[in-house]
Every structure is written in structure tokens, then in C-alpha cells.
Amino acid sequence: MKNYKTQYLKLKQMLFCILLFTQYFNSLEGQNNVRNFLNISKSNYSFENFIPMPKGIPETSGLYFDGTTVWTINDGGNPAEIFGLSNIYDSTIELNDNNIIKTQFPLPLKNVDWEAITGDDAFIYIGDFGNNPGNRKNLCIYKITKKQIQNNRVEIVDTIQFYYPEQTNFESRFFHNFDCESMFVKGDSIYLLTKNWQNRKSEIYRLPKKKGAYAAKLIGSFNPDFLITDACLVNKNIYVTGYNLKGNQFIGSLNFGSWDGFKKQKIKMKPAQIEGICFIPNRGFILTTEQRKTRCAGIFTLKSVE
Image (cartoon, rainbow, N blue to C red; front, side):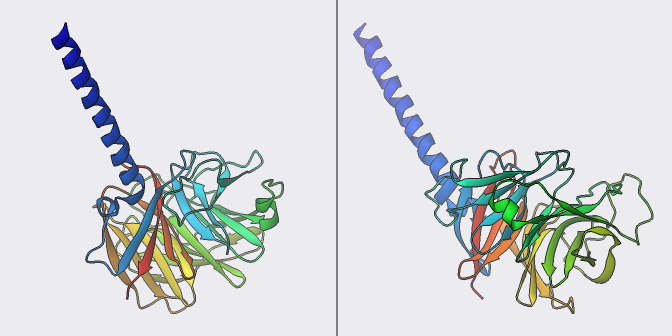
């Protein structure tokens, strides 16, 4: 009986140690274990922190910084919602429903395939133009006043519909050049950067920011040799992020207007997929990754060391 109690106490102590180790490991995995998430020893960017996203944002798909808040959306098939993130600089703070802003959109508005979010002084724009199979004919961008977002109540949504004049084949297929997950605004225009599954290039299209139906105007192209998932404009440079079919992640830049001078940097990562990028002055680039089988969705910061 005595030996049984001794063995029981040893087993209990062992299980307690395993529990403590698991909790400690999960904490590092979610917050401070930087080298397990990014290997940036040969990168031109320094990593600051990694914070797991709330459970309600498993497929973060685009980022926009409005001067005070970082906004993100979920990918297609999720509810039509927009999320405002705070405390993203402190890796000791858990992002959850208590410190995020969630704004729901009125039905019958649906998230068919929301892939990008951007904005200007008065409006936020959400791109419902994800087109992986290349067969969509209902591509659009939703335009919402910022006052509605700040009040968590969206009642009026303007729709900017568009199509690519160069697209003539609408059969469902994998390799094509008419998918898109990236946009930014400048002046009176919206700029789209395509995600070309077929040739790994990216075409640049321009649209008016006004409600209506338009033929997107092709104004340039460049060759990132990877699939672009998001973009942001910083001064006269466009910064993009994305991945290739081998699972490698990248951040790159090119010149606005001339669409040249493209350069990229590989970001060595364990299984992940970067889906959003925005820039915060004096902080650096904020990026998000969507949920994977072995990795939760997360948000992290990169600073250029060039």
C-alpha cells in the first residue's frame, strides 16, 4: 500500500511538471518564442513580437491602419464583419473579444471572398474580389464611411462593381491571372494588384472611388515571382507581401507610378501564410498570418534595418 502511494505521488508530481511545461511552452509559442516563428538572422528586417489573433479572426485577410487602429477582416465564407485591433505592440496582452472592436454589417451583405481592406480620410474600402478559380463575375468593393465603423453600426454601404476587360475565360480553373487580394487608395482612385496563379506576375489596375460599375483599367505590371496577398502605400513606395507555391513568404517593394524598381526579401518562417500588411510610422510593418493546422493566426511587427 505504501509503495502504491509513493508511486501515485511521483506520478502526480510528474503530471504537474508536464502541465507547467506545457503552459510555459504555449506561452512562448504564442508570444515570445521568436526564433521558432521567424528565422530572420539573414533578413533585412528585425522581428519585434508575435501575438495570437482572437479565435474570431482565424482567416485574417488584409490590414489597414487609420492612424489610431489596425483594422482587419476575415476571408471568404466568414461573417461580414470588420475588426479593430488595439494593444498590438505588447506581446504580454492577449487579443480577445474584450479589447477588439467588432463591427457587423447589415444583411443581405455577404462575405463571398473578402480579401483586402484599405481606406482614406473619410472611408474604408473592403475588397470582395477573391477569385481563386477564376470564374467570378460579381467582383466588387464595398465603401463605408468611417463614422459608421467607429459607431459599430453600418447601415449604408456603397458598392463599386468592376470587371477585368482582359478576361474572356470564366471557366473554373486553377492556373489563371485574374485573382486579386491586394488594393490601396491614392487620390481619387483605387489600385488593385493581381495575384497571378499562372505566371506569378502582378498586373496593376485602377478604378474610381465612386459608387458604380466599371471596367478596371490596366496601367502597369511587375514580376514578383510570388503570389501577392496584400499591399500598402508608404510615401512613393508600394509594399507587398505574399508567398510562393513552395510555402516561402516574402515582403517586397516597388515604385508607385513607374511600377519599377521591384525588390524583395524572403522571410524565413515555419508553416504560415502571410495575408495582411500595413505600415505604422515609427513602428514598422504590421503583418498577419492566417490560421494553419500547426499554427494559430497571428499578428507581428517587422522593422527595416536597411
